[in-house]
Length: 111
Image (tube, rainbow, N blue to C red; front, side, top):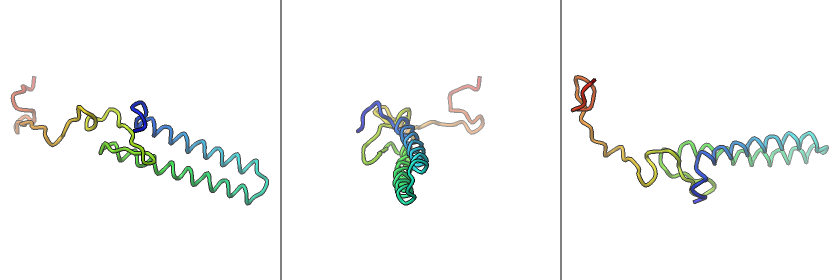
């Protein structure tokens, strides 16, 4: 695991920042490098790196529901998700009787 302080939300922000930095670097490279072939090559490499970060970022959105988040093969904790962690809630084990007439749990007055 990458560390308890480094959760999926923080990694997501870091990946977005990385993508933005790579975009800025590509723009700067295109402006500063005079040789067209070298500028294009560097831009393609930076775009590829940004694509890799984007794939990792998109995987973080889906994995928070299954509590199995990984970034580049390293586990990342999932914050503020009641379905994850040691005190997890198993939605399949919640047993509540609902009153058909009121739509409220049985034994709870509507007051």
